[in-house]
Image 1 (cartoon, rainbow, N blue to C red):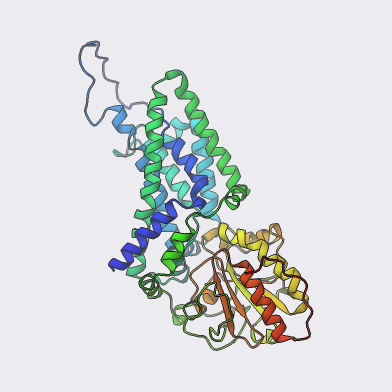
Image 2: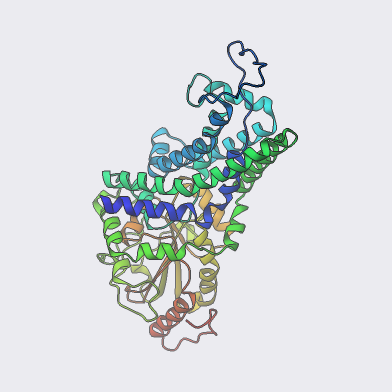
Length: 470
């Protein structure tokens, strides 16, 4: 149990400083430093003390001390909603009969409304009314701050590592054990630390600026405009471009976690077993090769030579196929004789988006000579489970190879996978020969693809490599 707590804390800390959280930071910064207009008192206001020699009151009810809770409310709301919905969001939406994109839509609406309330004080007063009867969050805009945090939590899409993968996959499969809950709480606490530090920085600067009455209003409007702009950017996935342009400076930390045997063993104990997974749907790929104990453990990620990682597990439990003839399912048994690249991905995963151009180039260059690329889309968040959202992303990203929607995480579980993205290179006999976890290793992967193509068809003629030699 202590191992899970430590893993969760470290994973949360890494997540809280990853480049994927950057779109949230300006909002947390500005919102934490923005003074809210106090709600109208329900009773007659106290008389003004004209004794200027008397020092100001120092009770806990003083305005500065009340407003100092704003960063904590924003971050606590964000962490609470993100943790709860990452763990049980999909199951909750299904039970209520709501679409999987409902939470994201609600978060976007909350961000728009709270941003507009900073621009228009009358709207802020209206939004604050429901919270007046709550003693802890009913004053000085605390309710709006907490609601903003709740909304941000539904829009928070951090770079996924093995810790977050364990949480989301357990939630998606309904295998929520005590260990999963402990891991989730530890992850949330670790994630809150850097976010709260950033919020406090915004609070400190906001206090200085707010002392100048002529600038306080301007500061609030800037914060509101930032929230509205972020909501629009998130709605149209415009923030993805900025995130793709930035290097993943936390990748080395993630690799240290994924390479730690104790961490991997602890996370492996939380994996849902095959018996826990729901029955395959009618569009499942059917029976496949005998499942190895764990391809991701038998293979070393990024190995420069071909290795034998055991027979490839079947692609099963697929909810829907894209880019196949009439949506017909593919199976690895039916692809014997071809070299197959199975890539686990999710459309909002920035690391996956960075790797995507390489996969598309390999598909275009080697499909005609025996390579079959299959994208297994295993959702990380609830809105990624909507087939229409996946179809739209496939069109926007110009993906033409087959994609399997693995909403039940059955294929993911069969491969004992824990990462987005992860590429499994399978030879013509159905054996996994190479594993690449995360970004990078593109030159090695292409070289090994070429070796397997030549092995499968010695007479094949290949064009020059696309990637630098690896």
